[in-house]
Length: 254
Image (cartoon, rainbow, N blue to C red):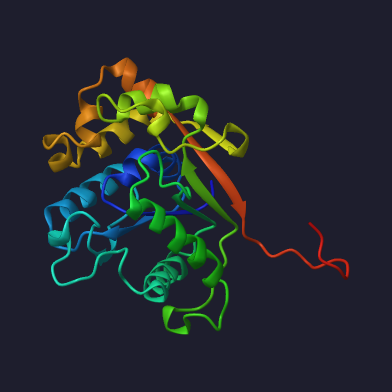
């Protein structure tokens, strides 16, 4: 199993979108870690994140410390993740990539992972830039020695799963066509995470404040075991290779 670094926008995203793969890799002895863009150290959600990562075997939280787009007091005195200078946010992720030296990086898809939350979309943008910059010595030299991951995996949901997954994880009454999903043809990797589902569920429910307020972890907690399996027993990814290929030919080609 390759070493994995997942970059997500909020505490609980790591467990919902990639908790199965993180638990799978940790159980096989691979190094795993998680970077979370929003919420600051000392907040209740940072504490819940620490418990979730302990369950998943993904090490201590790695917090960028920006504010959630919709919760200003998630990081008092810090800008919203969306408002932070782009180069600053990219450099912060580069520093974690170079510190962890993962073979694989996980990030949200370009649509923002089912809900289309603007922080999810921005986490995709920032991570897509960071995985390239991390391998270039002249970019962000203050962030450590360069390291190039082999692949970026975008956590997503295919259109064919929108009714099964979205209908169970989404808010009641949300039409299926409102979910932000990917075309089935884009999916490169489908992972059956049923063997690690108990650990994934425990990590999701560790985000206790989100359970109590009825956010996604709360809706998951209210599902029957069968529906939890249907909604969370599979994870889908779009792979993007990062290794540079030798140039061939003398002209640009479509």
